[in-house]
Image (cartoon, rainbow, N blue to C red; front, side, top):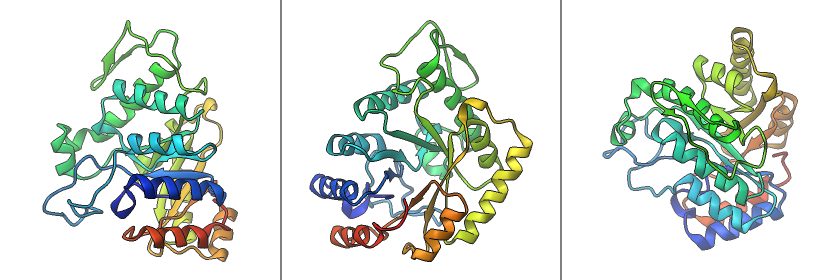
Length: 278
């Protein structure tokens, strides 16, 4: 399940009802997006109107964690360059501990220049910051004496506890459809997350990931790269398409009940798609 921290589904009562219902119906994971601010007036590449509500992903997932017991809690994605990596490492570890190790930290560099500018980040720096921040957070999550000295993050002689539940830190999921995103997923992610209209679109991304795997080494500690995919345009997923996604190796097929204007319609969408593999 994807996207239920925005528009008409942001209220506490609807969030509680839908989260519990998703778990009852057997959904494996609950994913939310991230925009700290949105361009106003709206620009062509913006996914939402500036007045559309969207909750902070970690605050929202903390609320969902308290309402559920099993469902995985994913950011799909969190715009990493907009966050302080030391503070974020603490927030993610805290959520992971309180949820019993259910966090899937999906990250990407972002793409909206007005949003980046509002938090003091140059668009040209977003890739470098993403890579450094991932390495810096891993130091705080896993090393007995955390230290990192980079262009955008710099610390030593500090420590942070509690650590995440897994000794290697929470599972990292890299989002994006560019060659750089594919390489980052191979080199730094337990998984990759993308979106598209069909299994054929996914196949193109898988080709990109295979090419990246021939270009950059993958640390053995990361294991097999997990594939997470959101079908959009159309959002309705037919049974034959779900089977094709499974054949292509999708680990988590995420369904996205756009346009998120009516909680009752979202509930019905959940019911319709509950029998699909997620």
